Image 1 (tube, rainbow, N blue to C red):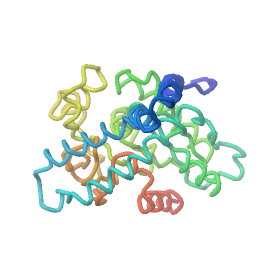
Image 2: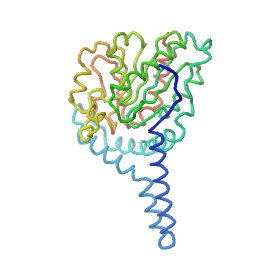
Image 3: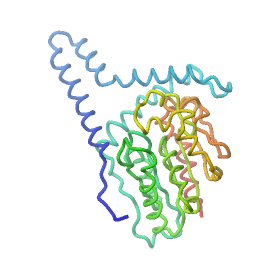
Image 4: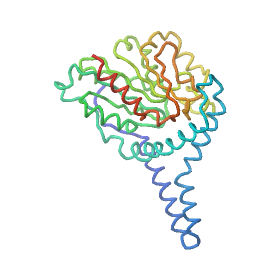
Length: 307
């Protein structure tokens, strides 16, 4: 596949959404200021921070549907703290890194003489995300001088099956730069994209390990509301996921991080894979899980130690 200039359709969409929200909030603030500063600030907050209410609804549904083992049912305190953390991480990712700074840390593939023999990684983002999601990880990888490619899965609302060539190209790039099969690091739907790519003949031999973070390996309760192809593919007990699991024999390749406070992928066990190294983290929400210090450090250690 020839080299192409990086692009992100999603970045343009999220730029428009972010600018519209801030503009709308500021317009209300100015318009209502003389009449009532309190009403002006209240309206501004309602417009700009409305996402927090949607997050709260997700946590309510999470609590309602998690009826598994006692260790998988979070306390109200854990849910509240997870909501607070997600209220900080969500706008940082969706209103800043992804729309405006998605290519701030470019892929590291040269100089190859410094990268040879040092394990590299391919970073695969989730639904309504782009490579900007991984910016803190990419900065760490660049500082450690380990090769990496962070993909943009385009088109953002296509079938998960269509992302396999993008992942294949990224794996080839990192392997060529290092001389070693890379580690795949995947968040959310990215874990399903990696599994879809692994169905290709010989793909499992081209990767050293696969790390998934909050991936809906067995679907997610929320996907029942989606009418898009990509959403239906993530429905619990859906035909696409059943077909994906048929013949899978490489689950030992996987480390699956999952949380009892994941507000997107629930019930809790849906983020696990049979035969994988499944690691439960308590009290951390979906986006926040990817930036949990323990998850990040353990994953980066795995990449650096893999020879």
